[in-house]
Image 1 (cartoon, rainbow, N blue to C red):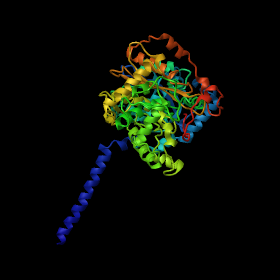
Image 2 (image 1 turned 90 degrees about the vertical axis):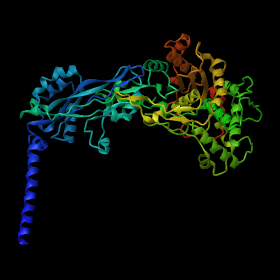
Image 3 (image 1 turned 180 degrees about the vertical axis):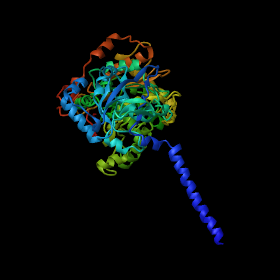
Image 4 (image 1 turned 45 degrees about the horizontal axis):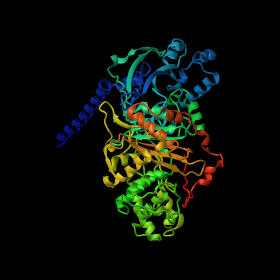
Length: 631
């Protein structure tokens, strides 16, 4: 018995010894990490930053690419600068810049390298690299600079900048380091993981002075950096630049969509800026100047600004009324006892004519029938029940919610329901007379330009839409986000779109947008005039073309420009012609839009509303003013 125990004990200790021997063998022979760490004085680990992915337009033109540059790093405890004045002259900086940069580097770490001066061009690097050998503690690292082929799409593309302290602390996995770049807005932010690529690592030998002596172990432990995935957008760069030129000296938005796919063809936020100015070493200075600009060029109006849709909303009212069966294509209404005014147009005895002439009383009656289901009872409860049913039908058009575009900070707008008015008046203490301004797209409705462009796409498709998106392909395989392939139905039957589209064609051919029609192209459009408490009304136009086979749907908003046919419709129709034909036939209209300067009409924060004859002509709004009517 004792003999067997002795063998068990001996076997146990032998097993433990073998485990220790195997572990020592692994650490000393197989595992390189300890060898690297023990050689830290002679072996240096260098992180290679990959190029970010490039961005292309729908025709294959390059929009965003990378320019190689060099960053100058400093390790404070190694830094030796005896002649500070000469050092500053070499780098082209002031003495106070040198002091603040060294202080920041020391605050970060005295023993780790950190950024001293970023984004030196190849020419700058070539001119100073020999001189910098005299200054120990400084080293160069390859980097890249985002470069734009055209001064356009600033808010859509977004920008990259140095990662913030807060972002460093919040990252779920330790990928980014101090002074790394990261997408901060727009496409650059949404597709950061795809664009950033994969870091590489090199181990190099150096002597005690830090001079490079070649790769360690022939580079067998090195890993190559992998460039980020390229992005393929639906943007038409030529049309985008043309739209930009039409919106010069104006405040507003242009959003153009390919109806059959949801791809964004053009997206203008005016006023804009050259994205190259936020891709330089002077980022902080330039960003601060843009942030101070009273016209808010950093504000991405297509997805963030909210407006009352005005008469463009009448299209949805007509569609819901037809689908619910409370009106027919031949329905007509008188103007008797109607609290909203008329525009002195011909008779509107059909839905199509109501749309063509944008008749306010007509759509007041349509909305009233929708709310009461043709059982006209002006009671509190009937109004509440009808409004919630109306709300649910309208929401299927993407109104009052985020569409899910691949851009950050999309504003969902406002689509009021029973609960909304209960907060204002109390439960069952309001009725139709409190909400009728919704009938003509006023009151508490708030909508973004993106959503109105999507409404145009829905009508072009006769009842459905795909989520609008800027990027339709990622990587060499051009992988598509599955969410952008989902078809969203509105629940309105295709045949109910016929009279509405007929009326939209009439609006362009002989109605409110007739002055900007395009010869040879059948455009279906609708003007809108968005009431505005501060200054002149906003000009709105939505359209699609060709009406028989839609290839583009568009929404144009021009702030404080007045009626929809004055500014928004001409701009939209010019863009439609440019996209479909690559030329412009109405040169006089084009020249007028190029020269149109509406900036002086825009009421900035702190300015007083000007007194004008237009102010007296505005119709009263029967419901409380929304909190957010202007960007």
